[in-house]
Image 1 (spheres, one colour):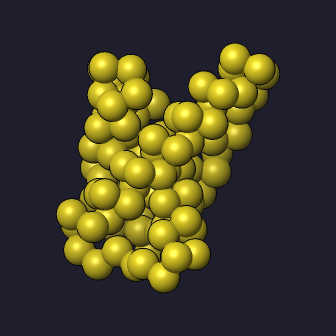
Image 2 (cartoon, rainbow, N blue to C red):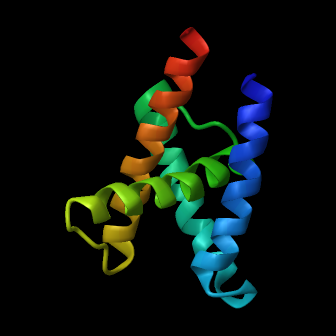
Length: 104
């Protein structure tokens, strides 16, 4: 179950990263932001990161989750720091849901 969930997160993250970046030309900054956000979420949830690939995937998926949730309350990220906060909060929520599903 966990492997299937991580594969689904990986596929959605990669597709979202390309779309979020506006194409392949801006993919590197998006991956960098995702990696930092995933690492920060890993530090907060586990006390350490998950590894570079998982950090990026968690960060990108977290950016999507954070953007949706912040948009629902009327907040929109502008700038690198705001996007990093949004992605990190979304990543923490994602990791909390994955942890909850693993214990159920």
